[in-house]
Amino acid sequence: MIEDAEVLSSGMRREVDRCDKAVDLALEGNKVAVICSGDPGIYAMAGLVLEIAKGKAQSAEGQDKLPPIEVIPGVSALNASAARLGAPLMHDFASISMSDLLTPWELIERRLEAAASADFVIAIYNPKSKGRQEHIGKARDIILKFRSPDTPVGIVRAATRDDEKIVITDLNRMLENEIDMQSTVIIGNSQTFTWEGRMITPRGYQEKYKLE
Amino acid sequence: MIEDAEVLSSGMRREVDRCDKAVDLALEGNKVAVICSGDPGIYAMAGLVLEIAKGKAQSAEGQDKLPPIEVIPGVSALNASAARLGAPLMHDFASISMSDLLTPWELIERRLEAAASADFVIAIYNPKSKGRQEHIGKARDIILKFRSPDTPVGIVRAATRDDEKIVITDLNRMLENEIDMQSTVIIGNSQTFTWEGRMITPRGYQEKYKLE
Image: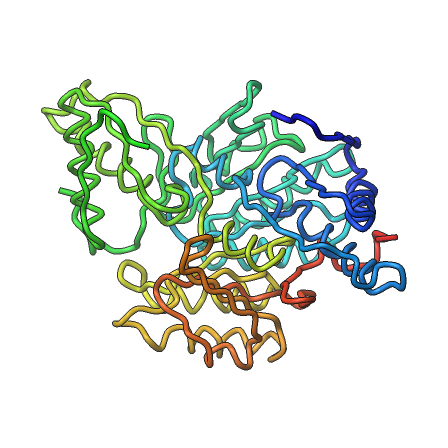
């Protein structure tokens, strides 16, 4: 889709360098687009670009040179995984990343506990990496303190891509399935049920609406 | 964009009728698309369609007649509002609807308390309607128990539409602004800051990454 534009790529874990380069190029007068998968506004590049732009704008050489920055929303792993699973996000939900690179693990545990105790559907980003094999197991243990072992759990890897993999399981058996850094894990609330390979959270708690 | 298709519309609050009709038409052999704004998978039509399909599939006349159902993800108010505000959702967040039509108010309060206490960014859907003017004020009071009055708050009405309205304010003054049923309210976490009319949540808690 790209015509007549210079393309610069960077590897994984090089996000800061990439955004830094993008802001520098913008300061030099170029029109620059930073591209990432998913929604740049959810755990992604939008914040980093703005933070770096702020730093440079406030420095002597950046003053008055920074062009306008626009964030274009997209379909995050949350949206895509939910669609592939059925309709798990029909009610209040919490999104929690298992990455403790920039967040104390104690705070992640506190969030899991808070979300589980208040019956939020829970979406887990970055459930596992080489350095953090055990976090998703700890998360499951915390959620099990508040929720039944047969609570539906959806695991979606590479949602909507060619190598997509979708599993619907439950809290009890979820760790028997492959979960990696590219997976998103969605844990149902107390009302979530499964039907024909779908995970569905009803939109309410009482029989206040009739379906037929 | 629609060519060669029959279009059936329904008004607000007629969601059940609309989905019911859509499933009936599908059972009659039609190829049917249910269209809604935002992402059908976040507080929207996907769940209702699946719930109704389940009911009809399990009835005598629906047996074996139900065609496959696909959910196409989209950009929810959460994604769109975040993009328009800057980058408030760079860290863990909770999405809570203020509508107590189908959810006990006590549970909504419990969720607000849980999300506020664990320093989630909080996205509030359906903040106000004619019947519920006071809920958003109660929500603010609960969040203020855990967060500073100068915590950034973004209010986005009709995100990305012609009549879009964007306000960045703080917990202290948020109620001085117009908030209605079409608004999405995003409340920052303890780290969220504003810069040049943007609301930015950093992607971590410690100075573990360098920006320059």
